[in-house]
Amino acid sequence: MKFLASVAEFAEILRESPWSERSSLHDVLELAKANASGEEQREFVRLVENSLALRKH
Image 1: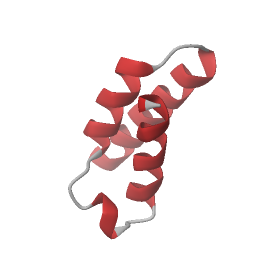
Image 2: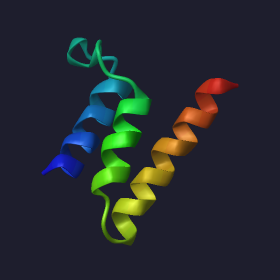
Image 3: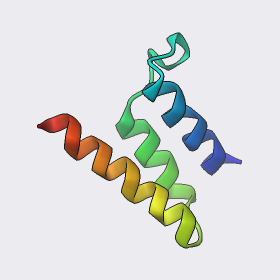
Image 4: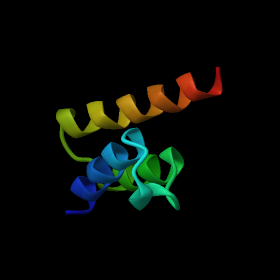
């Protein structure tokens, strides 16, 4: 469930939802990394890492 919460939080951040005002991609990454198991979930972690890298440029 915690991994799925990280996916939902990521979606809210992308939508610029008011529900994500206190969240960050760093929070999403931390939660996803801590709860990822399996290749598909690790791919999501890489997606979040890439999103963070893009925001720095």
